[in-house]
Amino acid sequence: MKRTLCLMTALLLFAASVGTWAQKPRIAVIKIANDSPYGAERLGPAIADWLVQDLVQSGKFRVMERKDLDKVLAEQSLSLSGAVDAKTAVQVGKLLGCQLVVLGAVTDFSRHKSGAHGVWGLGFNVGKTTAEGTLNVKLVNVQTAEIVYTGSEKGSHTFAKVDVAGFGGGVDWDESQARQIFEPAVKKIAENIAQRSEEIKDSLGSVASVEGKVARVSGGKAYINLGSIDGVKEGQTFVLYRAGQPITDPDTGQVLGQDKTRIGTFTVTKVMGDHLAIGVVEGGQTAQVGDIVQPSKQ
Image (cartoon, rainbow, N blue to C red; front, top):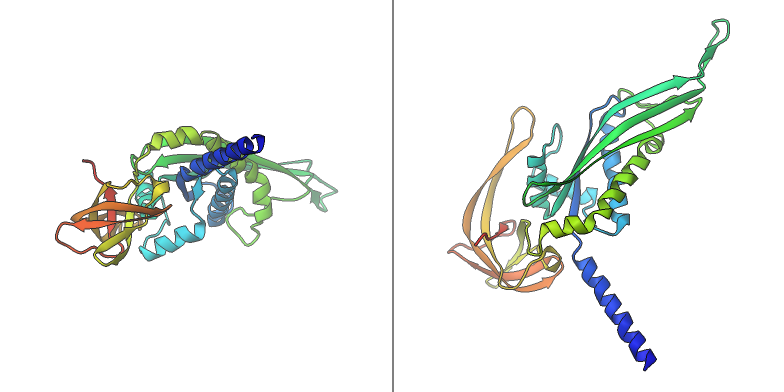
């Protein structure tokens, strides 16, 4: 009897853990800008990679890897070069099928030397160099464009008798030094986001609120890349669109928007996996791979 009770308890705990995992929001770190004189174009991507690693390790989110983000952007002929605002990040997040996107920036970087001394003008020795900067991050709900989290952490590190390489983005960039300066700040921000994961998840709702795409068309049926983890339910109706070419700013290259034409509706007949559902298309036109599905407001 005791063995049976123990087995049942273990199964219930396992089922609960699976249910919890299945509800993890999908998140992408879109861009960390560098508004400081340190590290030039190298610092932002490095911090984005560290943040991705820490969010994955938290176990609270399904995190899109940077290589997958770059692949989707390349397929859509999109670029995140230059300034990226929340609106652009939301548009990219929808293309990625994410519920949350992260934007951030490094600001206020400075370095201070102490203990410097010279000997009869023959040279000098720098005793210590302290470098510090601020990392600001915001987390945005892709469906509503609402900012659901903001965080700011200061990173700093003191180097003994070693200068800080990387001002002006020269060849002396040293990623190990950058890690020592900023990694504690990145970890703190990831921890803060993870601690608020339940609150963030509840704000997203239980019904799919992200865009998806048609992944396959076969036998009069269409398959989309949204499923149980995304909150898709059998009988749920989506509006089906066909996208045109992205519209970009001729000066900055920033994505301003994208033309799309409504071609019908997609109704889910069966949820087949974490990110897979099958359904029927109505409206007179045949669905194509890459067509966009958005939750119906009706």
